[in-house]
Structure formats: C-alpha cells, structure tokens
Length: 319
Image 1 (cartoon, rainbow, N blue to C red):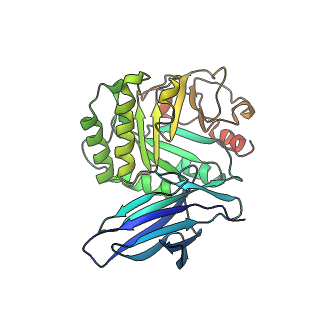
Image 2 (cartoon, helix red, strand yellow):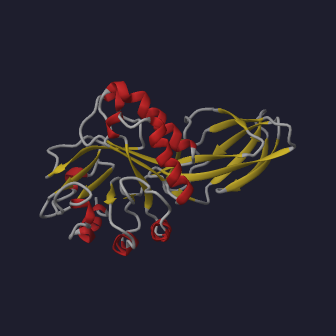
C-alpha cells in the first residue's frame, strides 16, 4: 500500500536548471536511504523516479510535485518543516533540499538522550550504540557551556565517530530562560555550524513562560534553517500546553530520582538513581536518561556515563 503526499514546488530563477534534492529521515531524525520518490509536473504527469537521496535537475520556472512512498515498516508521514499536505516552495537558483519524514513502526519508541559533557573520545557510548543499533540515541556535546572559543579537533573526530555509529549529535547552548538574546544564541549556533557536523541543537535552561514562546520558536526556526533536523528544548519541568511542540524533543523532567509519572512523548533525565529500574513504565516516553551519577550539572552527573549504561540500552531495546 502506498501512503504518500505531494509536495508542490515552484522553480523560479533566471538560470536554466536547478537541482532538487530529496532526502529522507525517520521519526528520530536519523538519515535513512533507499525510499522511492516520484517527480510529477503540475498536471500530474510522471517525469522521473528514484530513491533517496535523489537529485532531479529541474527546469527553472516549472512547478513540480514530489511524491514519497512508504515501504515495509516505514510509513511516510510528512515533509520536514512543512505539512503532510501540499506545499508550494520556490526553489532558488542554487537549488534546494527537501526531506521526507518516515515513521518506522518497528523501531523502539523510546530512545536514550545523553548529556555527554565528557571530553572525547566517546568510545564507550559508541560501542553500546553499536551493540543496540535500533535504540535511538541523542548525544548532547558541550565543549564549554556552548561551542567554546574555537574548533577542537578532538571534538571533530569524536562527533564524526558517533554519527558514523548512528548517534544523533546535538550541540549545547544556554538560553538562560530567555535572558540570553536571540542574537547571542544564534551566534553560538553559527559557531557549531562552522566548526562541527552536527544533527541539531540542545537549548538548555528553557523558560516555561508563555511570553518567551516567540523567542524559542524563532531559535528553532533559525536552527532548522541551517539544516539541523533535531532540536531539543530543556525546561526540565512541565510547561504550558501552548509551549509544547516548539522543539523536536522536549525534556519535561530533569531532577534527582525518577519522575512520578510521564506523558506520552515526554523526554526526561533522572540522576542519582542508584539502581536501574524497570523501564516498562516509560515505554511511551520519546527519550530518557537514567544515571547513578549525582549532581545534575557539568561537574556532577554528566561528567560520567551510568555504570549500568549497557543494561539501560538493553532494556530500551526490549520495550
């Protein structure tokens, strides 16, 4: 059965042709390949077919429709940054990339999000991910409460190694509950973008005040405009309904001990948990991190990995 939608794209420029690139990711932001794409003209006539990542040389000034088809356990859901309906996009003369998002119904629903405030290499986390490749893992790197003053070659190597293992890597920035200006936070994002190949940005100290909704929406839009597919907001506590969904992942609990309850799709971080509990109650969470580290800051819980990391990944693979 084919489940698809058509993305309407208008190409307009003085150039003759421009490349339309179609890529694909799963619901966790992981790049996936080999998904069938059909290119139509404005009248619905089929022009070309291919598999993601697919590049089509479009004629400037022509309107195209792009259809992404489902296959196996991967169901097409929507176009990244757009809707699951028709979109009209003006393709610049330099070309553009659109991303089809798929839901893998066979993938674990709950992944691991790791505040990886440890200097590289990160071989332990990489090895555990390789042992349990189907468990989604987000690693939050934090060179110096942000990107730091300059590129670090060891971070370059470590980030590339994690991404090669299938780990989603995001860079830490501090929003200081909205007190840090958009310009400041964007400059930090720009540094990450210039120095490292990341999958997204982690926005720490997120305010829960509805007055900051536009601020965080702007930052999310800015990050995704640079091509980042994963954005994480961390208020560390529940937030108003109107604030939910600004970022790809939102951490609504960060504290010592386990949360008393969670909502479907919520992410949480629990430190100072001496023994790994059953993870079955957290099967509806998007991402979790449970650690026996204490402190809950850069000099405490997040300067080491859980002693039971392997067991935590094994448990996630079974829920």
